[in-house]
Length: 130
Image (cartoon, rainbow, N blue to C red; front, side, top):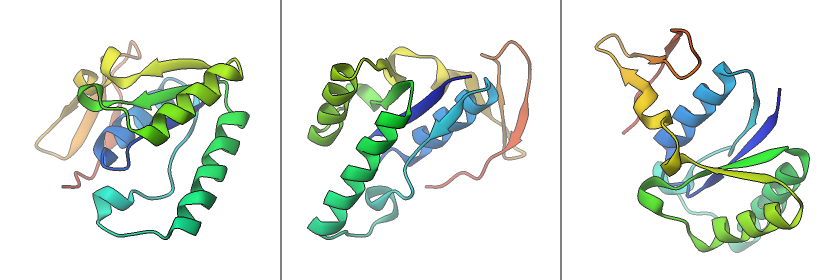
């Protein structure tokens, strides 16, 4: 069981949720973001941004590896710093764009998804958020 921190732009809330669910189903402890200001459409102050950055770097310290949510290869400046920090501290770095997590989750008409990557079928309720 590994501790994995999700890193990436807050505009990718859906992909964060997919990665969190799939990695948890695989038996990992997943650390993520508390909220997604870009997806949820609100602003934060520079003081809040600094605090959230410090919290996120502390989560990287606590993790065994980081999992970068890089939809279509997008990595912003904050995420680049997190990747550099993780690598300097000997953390393994994995990327959403190089995995099959997005393909492994099949949304159904019943608002559920299935993860086949684990080697077994698992149903989990999932709320689509646009």
